[in-house]
Amino acid sequence: DTGVSQNPRHKITKRGQNVTFRCDPISEHNRLYWYRQTLGQGPEFLTYFQNEAQLEKSRLLSDRFSAERPKGSFSTLEIQRTEQGDSAMYLCASSRKQGGNTEAFFGQGTRLTVV
Amino acid sequence: DAKTTQPNSMESNEEEPVHLPCNHSTISGTDYIHWYRQLPSQGPEYVIHGLTSNVNNRMASLAIAEDRKSSTLILHRATLRDAAVYYCILLNFGNEKLTFGTGTRLTIIP
Image 1 (cartoon, rainbow over the protein chains, first blue to last red):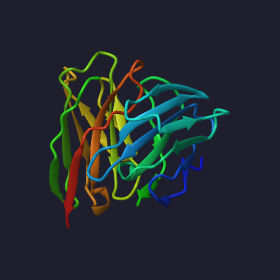
Image 2 (cartoon, each protein chain N blue to C red):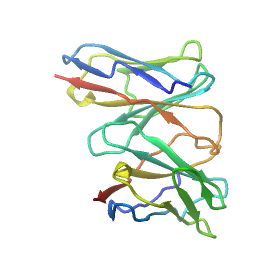
Image 3 (tube, helix red, strand yellow):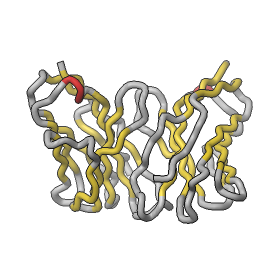
């Protein structure tokens, strides 16, 4: 169990550019979640996957955002045409099973700065 | 989604117990009570969870009121490394995403 891994840890990009983040969950965890966190706020839910199926998307996930988990293992979050308001910490989490009787493990996050 | 209410901030002296309260008056019978914490510049970290009975683990204890409308996270002997934002969250089979509020910012005084 090597924990949830996110890459890159930091990304600085110019407004209008596309960025892609990667999340490697704990192996055999079938649930994978993406969150966004801005300074002073709690993490905000973006989307989650059960294996390769994307089950729910937040209204925060505009059409510029897309997430994939093609083989039910790692996941990518892409932001197209970045805006300064996209600057935030993007967090990934994974969990083993369904329901409320489970714990989620978070990665260290990818900090995005749009200049 | 069932909501939780926590104080914005609390302070405690080092090496003393800390009791972090959470109100969840609209909790349903299938909601699990979860606690996570987030240390500075880190992702959230699972602390503990429970359904009806009090729970203990190596990190903390969770005391759940008999009517389940409130709970308390207990850190038995706070250290400086416990300074973090603590989140109380409800989860159930139909609502399986962690919904974070603003949590309680815990400051430990040396």
